[in-house]
Image (tube, rainbow, N blue to C red; front, side, top):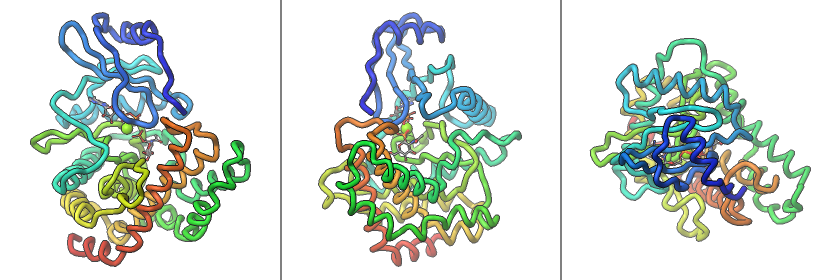
Length: 344
Ligand code: ADP
Ligand code: GN1
Ligand code: MG
């Protein structure tokens, strides 16, 4: 889906409904695939992030409730987090995190360790959020067999006549179908516990500070799930040598030194992991990356209705990078397992 164009009046009215009447500039911001995000400048010199929640994807009432619970709980603990300035569904306003940057690819090893440490801390910080259980914002979000079912459905419908073009990609998935249920099966059997986790740990969902005091953002999918969903999805972007939509696949692979930094940073903070979780750390990187590739492929077949896209084959290009990452992790599987053992 291409970016929706907003009339200036609509943006100013949304801001006014949340008490901001002195905006001097409202401009598209960031590279998120889901919500519509804007940077707001004001006469006072104070800046904000304005977002229109994607209501095709989220139940806005459930989402608002989860976001307010998570952010207020973190605030009560003194944890630096997103600060909600206003929330008038489907619009919300966050304080602009001044002095922080975000990136779409890791550029130095230390960054990978810091990102992993930030997500481990996030899981620790939310471990004692009081009941009731947070809402399942998107049901079966990282249920890989269900993602396979959605891909099968998209291929069967083939609404855009794109299936013939993706025979090799579908065969790639088919070869790996059997291993897709491992984490959800371990959750069903109780071997892997349910925890409050982020579920969208890509690198641009962490705001990086020069002193390493990074802040985890994009809390929309923070809900009950497996800690491995977070670690696995981290490996997907934070061990990658190139961007998620790099067209030159020779540049796309999983970098061992980034992976090691992720394991080191994550395990230093995630002391709560049990044996079944530890045993599947390296596997989770391959699985969550495969799952994301499956999601991009399904969206491509569905006619690009879910993720924001900038050009026709954008989702297919993203699918290719994910599958290349999976192959790279498969080729290094023994080394990755050895790295995990070293830090466990
Ligand atoms: P999406 O759900 O579409 O991914 P995000 O909430 O991740 O949207 O926001 C998109 C981008 O906007 C982030 O990757 C980050 O660069 C920027 N961003 C989001 N919130 C803030 C904030 N409070 N301060 C500064 N930048 C932000
Ligand atoms: C989306 O919102 P954003 O851009 O941070 C998606 C993630 C995918 C990611 C792929 C709610 O993340 O699950 O892994 O794109 N978020 C949602 O880049 O579906
Ligand atoms: Mg995001």
